[in-house]
Image (cartoon, rainbow, N blue to C red):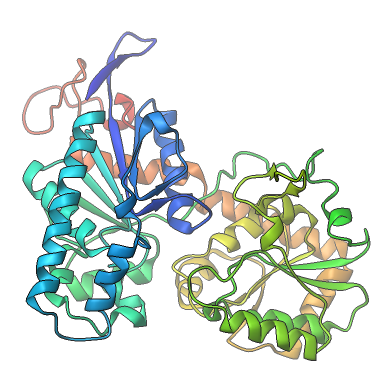
Length: 455
């Protein structure tokens, strides 16, 4: 932990913060939110470093350990042995423990190499996709007492594939662990309630956020020609489903909507591929679209994490290049941990159809967003509302502006800063004028964490 000198001459703490997970790459929710947290922390002059099995961060700030990736063959072998059964043999236990020791050594090297003062564990202590890594990190936290924030995006009990398992002892130990130097953060109120009920662990809710203080770039020289490149006309109506093609996204409801609108020049766009959950649902969506004569277009082969040119010279757009061209965003998910696509639609001032999934009902709906909602199935009321929005510019602009202001109030970087400030205070207490910890006794308790420059 270093001190930095500010313009007023006071010493403020500068932390080296280590983000640890199985992957920090691509557009998954964990990678995106970790990047946002790092951006906020680096704005306060902390340094962020990265440990994972798959990384797209700066090499000089990263330690990549390929076996830490949840899809590494050795990890997949372990998962095959422990899920879908209630018994594990001694050889499986030995294999888990052997790998655990391997990752402990790697984490210790990461801490030593970058002089890590604090760890932010991104979902690796919540979802049991990499058992040895979670166990290893738990033991490192116990042995070092290093201040750690567990940023939990989803838990084992939220995923059916983890319910039948042979590792109940390990889940109770490390997913998540209950340790004195570990603060728990969840991304929705439902998870907060369940974590307390199932494990007796208290947590802080920090919603996913976007930088609402920064006006988005809608069109520029790179993305202005997107409609032309995809052979859409300027007056075509583009309905965008900005998710992977997996069954819990409820994409069929958006497909039915496109069919029932019966408006000319309608196009239904799906941004992502199937991911790692098979292609049966994708095939069914494609066949259903053909049967119902819905003009559907899958964009995955022309999208990239960040905009760039392919080796053949073709433009590869980012998802954020597509949003400005969309006329409506559909988000009929059956379940979401939070809802990044929801926030992105709000950020880009786009009208939105959303299914009332549980987290939406508890954490988003009460904020007063103006959306077209459904309860698991498409109604004629919803179809009529969508048509009204698409045909009425005044109604549409009123809707999206209201939503943007609500998003700015509740889901901005400023909100994230305030939440992190509270957690840092719980670790470091008050600071005296020399930047030294003064959290137990003493007379000088006037400078809080936010004044110290921690957050």
